Image (cartoon, rainbow, N blue to C red):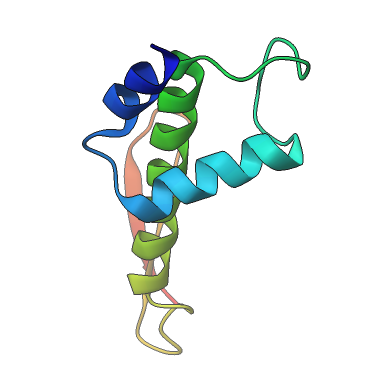
Length: 89
């Protein structure tokens, strides 16, 4: 019966996310109530979602430029009232 719960918890997940979640449980890195018992299907589902989110954030961060432009960039300085003032660098 517990196997069905695990399968239902991960049925729409990417294999890499499931593997990462299981590895975190094996290493004791995942959030669980007690390390003496197997995680519930809900705990597995939560950990798989967290792994998916981390994978997506890492991919998004990798696609961003790594450094600001060297010249001609503009900086917006905000006052206490929230209004912005553009300045050339």
